[in-house]
Image 1: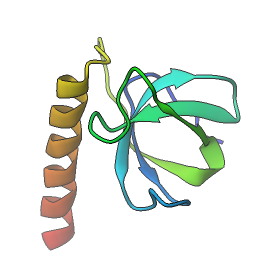
Image 2 (image 1 turned 120 degrees about the vertical axis):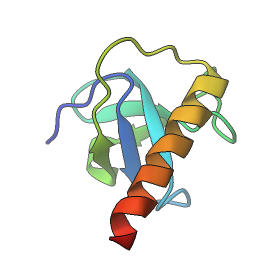
Image 3 (image 1 turned 180 degrees about the vertical axis):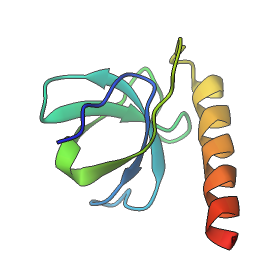
Image 4 (image 1 turned 90 degrees about the horizontal axis):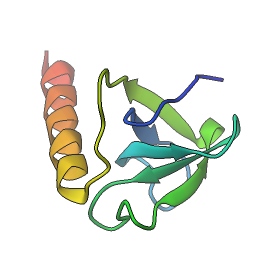
Length: 88
C-alpha cells in the first residue's frame, strides 16, 4: 500500500465517487483515510475511504490547510495539470 499523508491528492477508484479527485484530509490507520473535495464533501465532514479504493495522484510538500476553498483550488490545479498531461 502507498503511504498517504495529509494534503495528498488522490483519485477515487470505486464507489459512486469513482474517477473524482479528492484531497486527503486525515488518516485513520493504514487501511483508511478521510478525503474531501471541498464541494460535496466538505473538510468538516470528510468521507472515510479505504486506501485500496483510491490511487495517489500527487504528493503535496509543505503545509496543508484543510479549508474548503483551498481544497477546491488545489484539486482544480491538479485536474488541469492531469488534463494537459493526457493531451500530450
